[in-house]
Length: 358
Image (cartoon, rainbow, N blue to C red; front, side, top):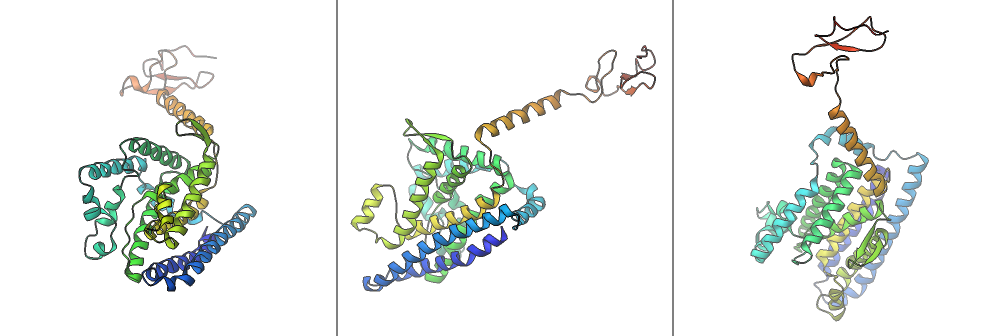
């Protein structure tokens, strides 16, 4: 994994720097943008091609045994795994529900005091680093319950597949990257971005589609469609958002057309989508050691429940005569009889009175 991060780190830094520079130049005259736009588009295309090339080479090295991926993550899990928050998505969903209530009661409250705002954070409002998380995935009364259930289901499945520690790492690293990039862009260009966790949540669907490509969803609650095709559509949405946010001026007919298709093409959303996509690439490929179908997961959960139930019913000691166990009284003592043929155990009341078995 370390080799992949080293390969992707420099191109990612260069792309983020060029994005910050493009945002700064966007405020100048259109003549200054004629050369910058094509150059930036070419850089984005080269970055995507280079990323997939590096990933393909890394996977070949991993299959041939030349790469020692996962070692750093395994070490971190052994050292800090006890601090992981189990069922993390449950608490995130509660925060989203709280954010939805705040949005309904006072829509201005979130953006004035809770949203991610680099200038406000540097002025001392450090709570924004944490409170921006509560922005709900949708503001619609109709779709909020569906969205919360969908994200909870996806997060729960990913946590079951990866484990609590790795899922915590994936989600919290995405949040940290969002904050760091927001602060860095403000310090370098003076451009104050504000975005939530929308694209980080959408990147969860990337991971889900990659792990469970054959799971079917009902599109519009009617049309069955496999998860992998929704993942492709999600990827296309990310690409359009990243590119259009930097090259399509706000307020133009093209920008309005994108709005009609649900694509809010702004520099802030482009950066958020890019950061979430990079977080997905780094962590998903690092954690992709095995793949189980949903049927396999269900069978494993069922088997685990049966094993726990059997362990709860089982007893360590049982008298071969009266059948009493250690659960029938703490004062009971059990011993094996050396004269009986076989492993027969007796309580103190029958240890010396039973008939020996031969």
